[in-house]
Every structure is written in structure tokens, then in C-alpha cells.
Length: 109
Length: 111
Image (cartoon, rainbow over all chains, first blue to last red; front, side, top):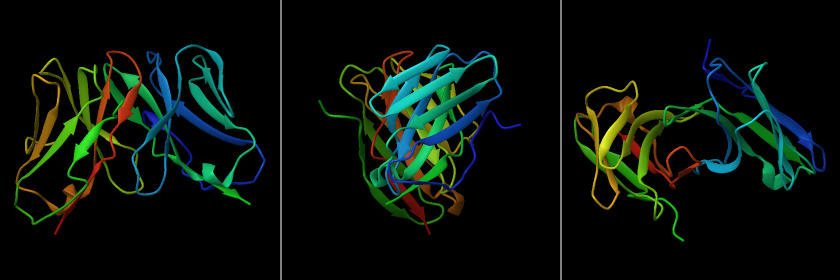
């Protein structure tokens, strides 16, 4: 079992829809989780961090963490074509980040 | 404020050669980490340095080494390059236990 698992996609949604990205992890000890956005040929850009159970909202983005079920999700409301990218889920482990392989999101006009 | 800066942005090397990649962290960040990202995969942890000491090492061969300088900048060195070392090398900086921010990366191609 991979430490952090994501569906590679692609996930295709129409413009204006809600995109739902999911991530599961295997380590019950992890406390910190992050979502990064990576455009093709670019480096990862931090968009959300979440440390406690529940929801955290920032603009059009909502991160959800459920430690009992060991999953993290990212919701993107009112999806725009500019949101088309690969979204990487990561958990922190003793100073390092462990990433999933990323989910490719395509937002179609 | 300037973000994490890396140099060079692109590099082409021949098998067997050596390469040095450089990184300057965000001002005030004392922790610097290096990651390797191959196409289609998430970044893989290589090293973490804090206060000039190695604090973590990923599953990479001894051909990979790094160091951190008194001004918290860092170098990643790779010896005896293999074709499989072709990847995007990412430097990241953070405050201890907080969010990690990546530089623009160095695209290394080994031919």
C-alpha cells in the first residue's frame, strides 16, 4: 500500500462546477496535510494546508480532513479553466513531505 | 519578498558527469529540503537540512549529497550521473513544522 494515494485521473469537470479531489494515506500518526497545484512544466504551488479534523475554507478552495478514515479531500468551487492542473496531496512526516502521484484536473469551458 | 530561488533552471549533462544545483531559501527560513520529481509522479524526498545539519535523507544512493551554508542556502550534488537521474529537482524551504514552499526547480537532462 502506498503511503499517500490519489487517483491519477484525469478528472474532467465543466466550467463552474465543483471539482472534488481525494487522497488517502496509510499512516495514522500524520498530523499535517497539504494540497499543492502544479501546472505542466512548473513547480508545485501550495494552495491549502490542514492540520485538524474538519473543513478549512480559503476562497474557492475547501480542504477536508478525516483522520479516523485517513482521507483528505480538496473541493474547488466554481471551477475555472485556469484551475486545470495536477493537484498533489502530501502529508508531513518528521520534516519531510510524502506525496501522492497527483490527480490531473481538466476544467472544460 | 523573494521566494525560493534555484539555479540553474535547466541543465543538460552527459552520463558519468557531476552536477551541482543551488538553492536560496525564503528569507528567515532555516530548513531546506530537496526533492526529485520524475514525469507523472509526485516529488520524492532526497534530503532535509536545518541549521547546516542533515536532518533527513530519502532512499537515494550515495551519489547524491547535499550541504547547507551559514546563510541557509544549499547545494545538491549528484556524481556519476545516470540517465535515470533526469528529472525536475525541487528545492523547498520552510519554518520548522510549517508550510513548505518550493522553488521553480531545475530541469536536469542526462544524455
